[in-house]
Length: 429
Ligand code: SF4
Image 1 (tube, rainbow, N blue to C red):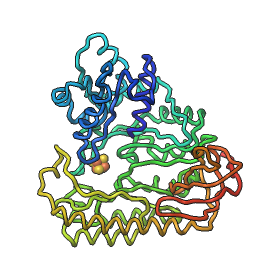
Image 2: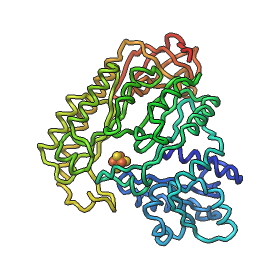
Image 3: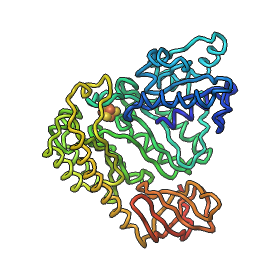
Image 4: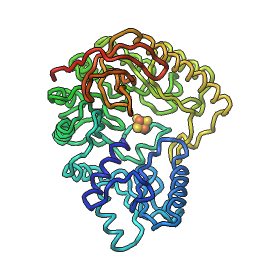
């Protein structure tokens, strides 16, 4: 989502004459768009500001803006702690960045803009064309969260669940497709909670987007198990453009831990969703997120996670040791033993990596459909992804970026597939 937001920040700043530069020391304005999900996010911001200070030591100081979720969480505190920062802008206020820069240029006073103004943000953003012209583009359709998992800062930094107007999204996708986008990934902290005016759900969006000529692939992320409703599950049967790959975080395989996390689902419910998905589309693959060593996790709880992982056979998953986020209920809990957590993480990651390896092995000597995203520098080699998001690097003397290519897989490793191009396979959309 930060990639989408960063691109939109560029679009807005361009209106007041600020253009993107790839040479850091040339910048008049330096925007650090931050994410609060990762461990020690706040300290990383100050470290980065330290590097900017060094880079500009003998140069004119740029206007320094911290935007995103760390700015929202820390707000005024950042300006007090680091005088080099001129402005903090929350994730629901970045549509104002052009006006705020002009205001700063006039008054030279520090600015703290961290209001939750999400409706206004998207109303304003829709007036400014999205300049992305990538084969695979991101598009935010939903923001915020009402679930309040005890470890997570999102409900505090992004605010309550909000769904963008249906037509606004369709228009933005059409605009991206007219500029060359072939694959769209719909984004939201709870993307499958999308519900506009109690009338349009995520399944309605997928249905409408499927009718857009030249859009070849549709994906969405990130979903909450509770919002995997039957109409959405059926989309994996009804719409071929919806790719058979779903990121569905479970976090733990232990019901006790899921309850302590306030996840609002148990493992049996999660398993029932997976069963339904496999029933409607046997080609579907699932990835997930796992938190290891959540406060109160015993070896038995951890083994419940391992058992679930083996049962489902996830691909492409993310796993981390629990780390407290200030202001969340879990931050007050006693931490588990770090050595034990590390041991568990290694055990889990070995199993996940092994599944990934075995999954990639299944492609060997098979033909697979790849959406070509770009050409590798100075080589007759291209990069693309399978329907299941696996990266593919392949040789070809006759293919075009943006096409669906038929590639024979000749080798693999845990992360990538390698192959040769057979034929171009352009599907009538
Ligand atoms: S559902 Fe996701 S975004 Fe919402 S609180 Fe839980 S982890 Fe955070």
